[in-house]
Length: 155
Image (tube, rainbow, N blue to C red; front, top):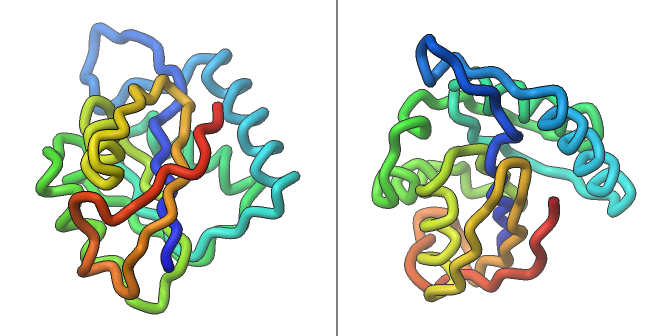
């Protein structure tokens, strides 16, 4: 059994500049602080983190890491513009010793990934919302359609 946490970045402001560099809003940061406290109260620990290298996802990860121990982390540029297939390929690369993994990413792909893994259980993740999935696999390379059960949605 593996655990996968899918977290959409917090609320980001609009910019005249480059989308990749958008930053979290004050409200987005506040909401993530509350989410982090909830996770801390649950005693959550995470073995591995995949995170888009976009500014808003990095800021999201930094806030969550204040409350939840994360043993290893990888910032991956491909997550930013990934389709479903690419996200699955990235997750397949998760080391086999990892039991709990978080993916910090973007919509619509992160919500589509959750639906794919849970056989159509679509939840449109809002900014700063996460889905906690239990995977019925022994190794990450086995991740795929209908290999997970959605256990909880938090915001």
